[in-house]
Length: 413
Ligand code: FAD
Image 1 (cartoon, rainbow, N blue to C red):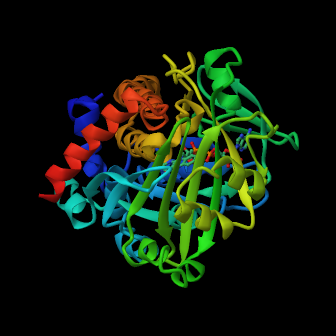
Image 2 (tube, rainbow, N blue to C red; image 1 turned 180 degrees about the vertical axis):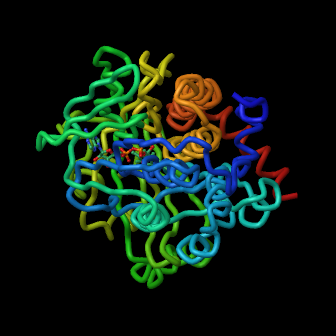
């Protein structure tokens, strides 16, 4: 592996356009399973690196759930490098600040300026967008470079020393040089890589997600400021928190309500009860209760994660994992999709250098060693935020709030 590629995870993540324009001397036939945000980003990066990529997706149509997503500068930087800056700015809302509030009173306990300040500090913006818009952005980027097979569930995988084959639910078989498993938190490919089934674990939390048309909020003087000044607002409560922000040119207000998983949902994503959601957050300040009264339907997501894996590469050297398939995490640092997209960029970078079949396995190991420490740290930090955000009322919570207030006072000086 060339020294510049293996330099360090940090080095690579700050210099991901190293391979801009460089096509690998050896063009591989790559099978990629999963057309989520991670899979699409990998399809783009690997085809840009000169490979023939076929994407297999179970779903009969392409799309994402109707909710928002935070796009942090480590990802917006990549999107800009991939030529998506202008389109991103059209669909994104740039929050001016992040604000944390006490759940019961709405008192502001934390504040940090974002907007242009973040862009200056990190060289790329922090934005909020609709997941469907994000998915379309990446889909439009990848679609002309790759072959996409929808309604194609991979049911069987056969790794060999010189190639890898997959079988679909229809019985159809495909063979390639490399298989990339971007098949999400319930990954079948992970089972093959690890040689055993290890399910993701419940984190004890679930998320309600809902969007409200902001025209409803604009009629209420208590709620209008949330639209007039786009900020990300978080309310912290014992065992729960709520994050809220504008998306779609401030036409929609996105709510993510994190709370203890009551085990009532069998699927990991299901229609939730808006009334139950209102009851679960009835002790929040009046503005939150007003917001929740506008919600007519909600999705309920059981949040799963896992302890960091110690291996993402099959012993054959022909199969590798990416995104939630290998590092699902709580969304409490807004880094799940971000890490998947970074994985894609690093994989594409490394595979723009492959000139011989014998290099595939070492390149996969280089990818894993560059990415695993960073994603493991992010998984652990996301768990830590669960503890911090959800502290019960009492001395620890007071200490947390006081520390946040001190930082806020310094920021506002
Ligand atoms: P997925 O999106 O799960 O894609 C996997 C795909 O593989 C699916 O389309 C599936 O149909 C397909 N598939 C699975 N098995 C097969 C098979 N056998 N054959 C064919 N196809 C198959 N991340 C952020 O960066 N920022 C945020 O603000 C953020 N907020 C979040 C809020 C919540 C409430 C939650 C739950 C998550 C959030 N995340 C966030 C995390 C983010 O959504 C995920 O990490 C990301 O979507 C994972 O992408 P992926 O491509 O790895 O997997």
